[in-house]
Length: 130
Image (cartoon, rainbow, N blue to C red; front, side, top):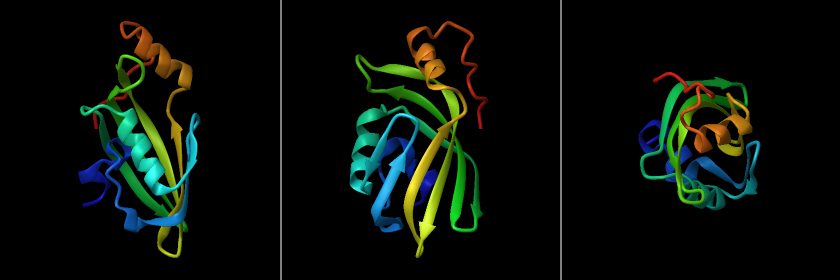
């Protein structure tokens, strides 16, 4: 039922009971409030073949760190396949619920875009399989 099975980072199939009513999300491109907004945005962005493969998950006090490999397609413009890269997600927890999620990418945004526009280029180098 958790992240590994539901892959909610790419499906939007979150378990709302894990999240605070005042949940906030940030990554280098997006900032939003509310777990429903997050779930709907993720479901709209990623294609059916998108995958979230967890590499590591570790609690750190009031935080939980998750490293995961993102692969598959996105529904941007006519749609595109992205070269796999690693995302580092930090959850902040308060009273047993996630109040904040921040995602950081292993490669800069311009390399993600370049990999979509010119997939034959050797950059970015795809993240290795999990």
